[in-house]
Every structure is written in C-alpha cells, then in structure tokens.
Image (cartoon, rainbow, N blue to C red):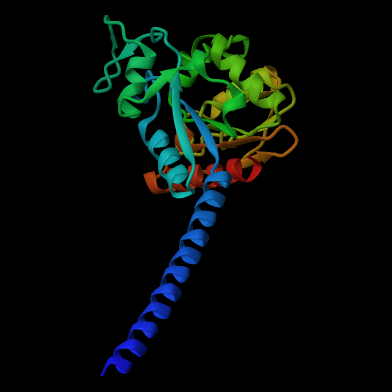
Length: 264
C-alpha cells in the first residue's frame, strides 16, 4: 500500500512538473505573441473637423474609419483644431444659425469625449494620419468651401500634413478632404470620384475641377475604391462625394484604411 502511494506520489510530482513546464512554455509563447502583436500595432491619428456633414465631420465616414481601424487592430487617437466653426448649420433645413460652436468640442461628440487639440499632434508619435470628410474639412480645416482654388489651410492642419509627408508616413483623406493634399503636396494624385454629375449620382463633381489649379492631379475612381499615390503616400476615396448607399461608402473607406496601414 505504501509502495503504491509512493509510486503514485512520484507520478503526480512528475505530472505536476510537466504541467507547470507546459504552462510556462505556453505563457511564454502567448506573451511573445502578445508582444509581437503590440510591436506591430499601427498608431493612427484621425483628424476631425466638427460633428455633422454640413458644418463638420461626416459622422458615417468617421465611424467607418474607426470601425475599420479597430478591426485591423490599430491604436487610434483623435484630434481636432481648437477653433470656432466657420458657421453652424441647421441640419434639418440647411439654414445658417446665429450661434457659435467650437470644432474641438463638437468633434468630441464623435470621439466619445476623447479628442485632443490638433496643436498637440506630432507625426513622430504616429504611423499614419486619416482625415474623414464632411464640409468641416472644407470650412474648418481650410476655407475651400468659400475660396476654392485660392483657399488657405488651417495652420495646424497644414503643419501635420507636412510633417507626415516629410516623415514618409501615409496620409489618408476621404470625400472633400483630398483638397488639403492637393493644396499642400504639389503634384500628388487624389480622387474625389467622378468628374461629372452623372445624373445627380455625383452632385459635388464640380469640386474636382479645382484639384488641378490647387496643384494636384485628379484621378477618377468609384465610390467603393480608393486611389493610392505611392510616391507621396497619399490615399484617397470619394465617400459621400457620391450619393451612394451607406454600405458602399463603408467599403470605400475600408479600402482606404487597408492601404494606409499597408503603407505605414
């Protein structure tokens, strides 16, 4: 009886040691995988321009960017300039309202409170930067909506695009936001979709005519596609320049996100 217990005890001890060793090896492998995953995680800055298509960020484009970035395992930080909006639009009827709103405070609605001033963004802290569209990109990040080809870009927006470009890091822009790249990065290729309205499918097609005078080159692409300028690491997609179903906008933004991360 005692001999059996002795053998059983030795067996249990060996088994325990083997189990512990296996657990250690498994944990070690798991930690290594975790560290590899963390080291390969892309840090992406998303720049917002308010909240709402007519005077700020197009919220569906912003959400599409964030969902695709989340799915790809990216670490996202959101920024917006701490300035007043150009104006405030009643989104029910399109009227200009008399009140004032702050771009950063409005952007925090999309960021669930986690938005930082654009003045704090440094290219050295991130692998890539993405600008969702919406009229805020043409009203608050620059004044393209008013001045067209003669527009000027908000100081911090111009600075960060220049920093990322100089560092060889990709810049993604949706919808009307590609005008920023055309203005700041001479010769870059961008898309805002079709160059004709096509019976109302592309109601803002006229804006593409400003890309050349701004300094860029416009290339036609479909709403579910993106355009990659590999030389300048600029990725663009038409998004809501097209009156397309939401899922097609989502697909186009997804294509942009994947290419931005590939270049990062």
